[in-house]
Amino acid sequence: MRRAPLLLILAAVSAVAHVVGVLVAAPLWRGAEVLSLALLLGYAVAAGLPVPRWAVPAALVPLLVDAVRAMPAEPGAGDFGWTVYGSGDSGFDVTAGFDAAFAGSWAALVAVAVLLVAFRGRGRRRHLIAATVAATPVVGYTAVRVADVGAAVAASTRVVEVRSETTLTRVGGPGYDRAEVVPALVLAVLPPLALALAALVLAVLLAGRGRRLAATGAALLAVLALPLLDAALAAVPHPFEADGTALFAWYAITPTAAMPQPVAALTAAVELAAYLLLVAGLTGSHRAAVPAPAAAG
Image 1 (cartoon, rainbow, N blue to C red):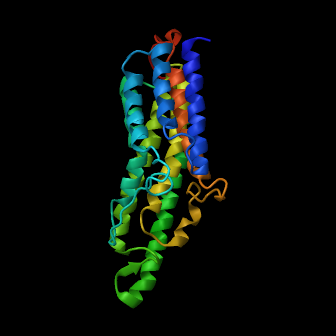
Image 2 (image 1 turned 45 degrees about the horizontal axis):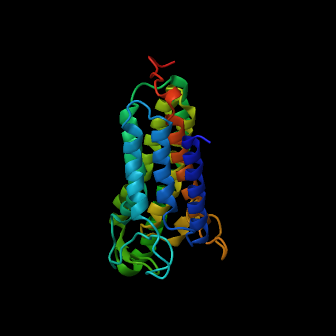
Image 3 (image 1 turned 180 degrees about the horizontal axis):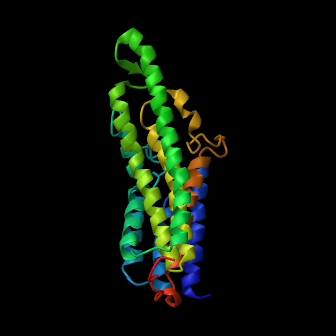
């Protein structure tokens, strides 16, 4: 077997091992995700880097850095489970949602930005229409979630204001003022929304260059933004009844003792599949010289 296909297969196997580890909340091997991305980088070099040759390695570097940073701890070395972002402060943290979203999306955002710069150009009209259609449910879901949380906060605040003027207290959580919630919600949705829209733009550009496999990978990164969005909003203190519209939260698929993290595992699977498709679709000497479209059509 040629070296490049073998590296891609091994990267896929390592990705599966990582996803299984997330699913059962017990990593099969701590470095599975790091190994998958490192093998993917090796595959890209062996298969033939596209022009510009720096694009794919530069996009994979932040993903590798983030994977190393987020490696699960050794068994018995601290708290059980995967990395959890948050603050122990008792007061309301306006940036808590943004911090949670940015921590989960910064590497993908940087990777997409690098590829956007490398493969910038004009997209074909039919691809632009498809991307617009795909962006509509993402933006719509964001609007519904923010409106739902905002409405629940407003309703809860009106009830509490009768008793304690302007302070809203969430059971089991910190107290906060209604005026703090709106900026917190807006900040929380910015990183996942930016990732979704940027990934769809990248998909348009790649599809216009005939790289349909890579475009599919970019489109999957837009899907990744949905669970990141719900995780970000969950970090913003709000009434529990507002969580009824969260379709991609950690509890959207009921956890069990055997599979305690099904949504997290699906999120990891979508993310790594997106990277595999992106790199596989961009590399290969026979595709390195595909020109950008001259005009929309």
